[in-house]
Amino acid sequence: MNIKTKLFLFATAAVLVSCGPEKPVVENTTSGESVKTNTVVEKAHVVPPDFNADSAFAYIKFQADMGPRVPGSKSHDKAVAYFEKYFKNLGADAKVMGGTTTTFDGKQWRIDNVIASFNPQAKTRILLSAHYDSRPFADKDPIPANRTKPCPGVNDGASGVGVLMEIARLLKEKQPAVGIDIILFDLEDYGDNGDPNSWCLGAVYWSNNKHKLGYKAKYAVLLDMVGAKDAVFPREGASVFHANDVVNKIWNAADKLGYSNYFVYEESAEMTDDHIAINKIAGIPAVDILHYNYLKNEFFEHHHTTTDDINTIDKKTIKAVGQTLMEVIYNEE
Image 1 (cartoon, rainbow, N blue to C red):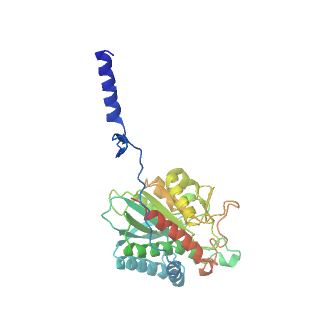
Image 2: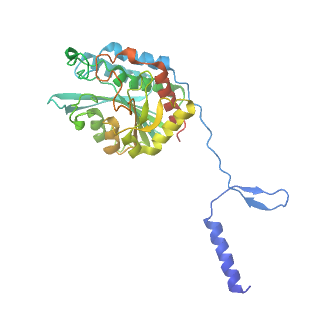
Image 3: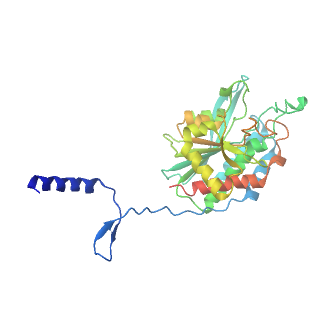
């Protein structure tokens, strides 16, 4: 072997060593030689607090007892004050973010998005959201005389809020490694069925006017209609398109916990919901956990009717949703 060959081999070995992955060195006790291994250290699993379905149900019922939270009503204003005080009492940085918007019927309304931040100094943040408003008209009610009445909005609205309120209570007891922001959106349900752009006005407003300059979140999770008995949550189309990794994370966590009968792996069409604005305007990957019958292409049977009341809520369903979310957020880094 000539000197040029030796220099070439030495240089090649040096490049391979310098470019290779850094791994722990393990001593070979029989030969005394050091060998490199490909040991992978798995992140320790964090056991989250137990999600209390009874507590979440009580928060849902409290909203139901207020009556429909339609824009401009006393129930709506009462709900806003209640949410803000609740989050502040938990030590969150809570506020009501106001603005104005015009609905499809030409009426102007004030927007009251309720925002609560936990561990606000944390750079890595997860956004959790739901809407609290009730649809002003039960236009899908089977009884024609009821179609001008407001919807109680219990599963469609209050259920997601109740789950997030219970999660907030548990955040105070045990803080996860990441910061959590909870937004309760206003004016989600005041839309025209023929115009997809007329819905989700509170989310659109926030996406264009975030509560904090330069706000970013690792991802967002929206809860909508998450309390009915035997609910099914397919992998919603826009969620898969914009945030497939997050969808996999949530659905796999549900499967691990034994909730695969709720979180099914089938994919549904794209839904008009608050997560669309979060994805497309705010630029945050967002997932919609939404009760939808993907086989019949329809929402749950009491959707936008006067019978969407407290009787639609099943504690087993809200337990499945709440515990799955707890599993996910407490194991984020």
